[in-house]
Image (spheres, helix red, strand yellow):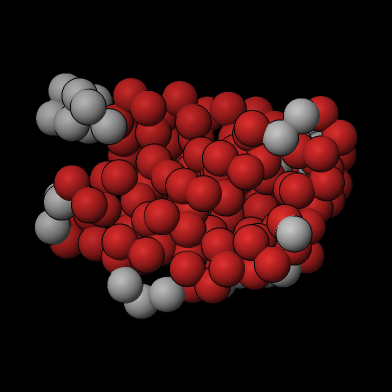
Length: 168
C-alpha cells in the first residue's frame, strides 16, 4: 500500500545521491497533491510521521548550500522540488509547526533566506527563481497562519531587525 511507498520516498530523499533525492522529493510532492481531499491530508500526515519534514528541510538546506557555492541546474531543480514538497505537506497544521521550527535548524529562517535570495536572482535564473519565490512565499504564508508559529516568526523578525540595525 501507500505506507510502503512513502517509506521508499523518504528513503530516496534521504539518500546522498542527488538524482535519487530529487525523485524522492518530487514524488512526495506529487503524492500529497494528487490524492483527493482527506487522502491528501492523510498522506501529508503519514509522510511527516515518517520523518519527511526533517528529510526535506535537510535536502533543501544542502541544495541551497550547493547553489550558493556553484549555481547548478541540479541544485535549482532540487530547491524547487523540496520547496514544493514542503508546501504540499504544509496543508496539515502540525506539519506547519514542524517546518517552521525544523531540524537541522529553523526551517523558517531557511525559507526566508531562500525567498530573499531568489527574489534578487530572478533575472539571472528566469527558469527557476520565479517558481522558487512563488513556492516559498506560499509556504511562508501557510506557516504564518498557524498560531503555534507566532514565537518563531517574532524571533525571526527580531533577528532581522537586529541585522538591519547592525548594518547602519
